[in-house]
Image 1 (cartoon, helix red, strand yellow):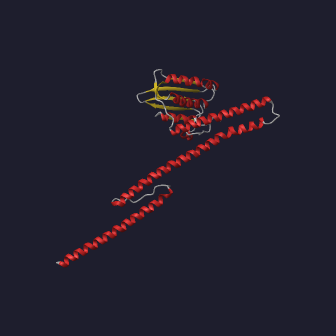
Image 2: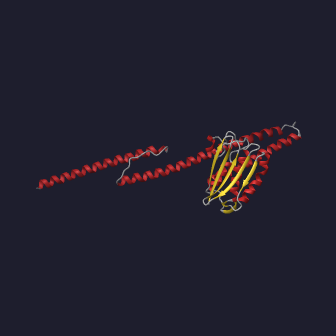
Image 3: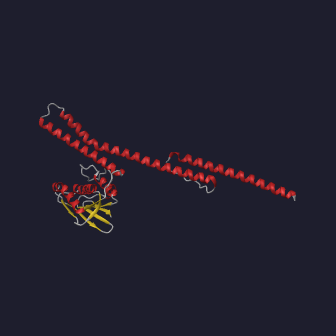
Amino acid sequence: MVYIIVGILVLIILGLIIFILLQKRRQERQLQELIEYLTKVQDFSELPGMREINEGRMGILQSEIYKVVTILKQEYSAEHKQKKYMSDMMSDISHQFKTPLTAISLMTELLMNPEVSEEHRLEYAARIDSQVGKMTWLIKNLLTLSQLEAGVLEMKSEQIPLADMMSEIESSLEIMAEASEVELKLTTPEALIITGDKHWLREALTNIIKNSIEHTASGGYVRVTSGDNNIFTCITITDNGKGIAREHLPHIFERFYKADNTSKNSVGIGLAMAKQIISLHGGTIEVESEVNKGTTFTIKLYH
C-alpha cells in the first residue's frame, strides 16, 4: 500500500514538473512572439498579424502591447498626413506665386531702364500694383482656406432670410455677368429662412455662382433656384456652359485643382472654400455636369 501511495506521489510530482516545464516553454514561445511582433512594427508601415493569446498574464500583456502599438500607429499616421499636407500646401503656394513674382521682376527691370518714357513707367507701375494685388488676394484666401480646413473659424448660427442674401449676391455679380454677356437669374421664395453664418454662406454661394459665370460662354445663362422641405433647404445653381469632363468631377473641390477648360485667371480656391464652408454648416454639395451642355451644383443645408 505504501509503495502504491509513493508511486502516485512520484507520478504527481513528475506531472507537475512536466506541466511547469511545458508552461515555461509556452511562455517563452509567447514572449518570443511578442518580441518578434514589436520588431515588425518598428517601421510603422502597417500592423502585422499576431496569434491571439487567450489566457493568463501573457494574454493581458499581449492585449496591452497591441493597444499601445495601435495608438502610436494612429498618431504617426496623423503626423505623417499633416506633414504631407504642409508640404503640398507650400508647393502649391510656390507655384501660385511664381507667375506674379516673375511679372513683377520683369516690370521692375523695365522701370530701371533710364530710356523708358514716363507713360511706360506709369504702365509698368500699374502692372506691378496689379500683381501685388493678386498676391495679396491669394495670401488672404489661402489663410482663410487653411483656417476653414482646420475648423478654427467659428460659424455663427443666425436666422437668414435667403431671398435677401440672394439679392445681395446678385447685385455683387451683376456687372461681371453683364460684361460676360451671361444671363444671371436668381429665384428665391420670400418666406424661405435658413440658419447659419450669413457672411460665410454668402461667400460660398458667391464663389460657386461666380465660377459658373466664368465657365459660361457669351449668350449663355446661370440660374439659381431655391426650395425647402421638412429636412433641408436646397439651392440649385445651373448653367449651360462648358461643362466638366467626368474624370475631373471628383477633384473640382480640391485646392488649386484646375480642369482642362479652366479659365487662365482662375486660381482654384473658390470651390474648395465653398465646400468647406458648406460642410462646416452640416450641409452637402454635389455636382453633375456634361461637357458642352452645362453644370449643376446642388447644395443642401439641413434644418
